Length: 165
Image (cartoon, rainbow, N blue to C red):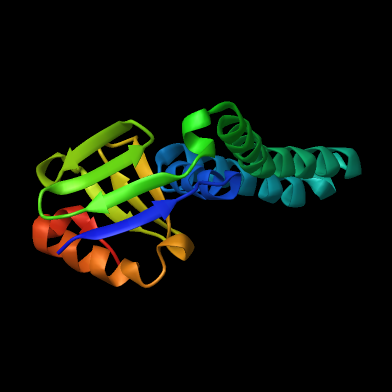
């Protein structure tokens, strides 16, 4: 079986990938827990310390909670704008050997045994070459070919490396 499709990444796609990377890791959970602690402290210390401490604690919680997503969005937008590779369309070819990505004269091949894992989220299919780096394939652009890609990945990769819904 051979699948071919073209993908053009947007800042929104990159942002969703970065959010997934951040909030499925320890740093994302720590920031959420820190924000919750700030909100709880602001609420419980109101009677002891007064309104100014409650407002300060609440503002700190909001800052912690929204700093990371805003930063990730701005970084995603900047990365797409600065990269000629990410601005233009990428041609994917998925076959029995692996996944080939082409753009102009350049191409890169990722063999099935080199794939760290494949994960699908609500909006993206992520093909990891290691724990951090991944090819981002927007599911909306993949369309009807998603099921074929998922079936091919389930055939070629060990079960523990595939998390496709």
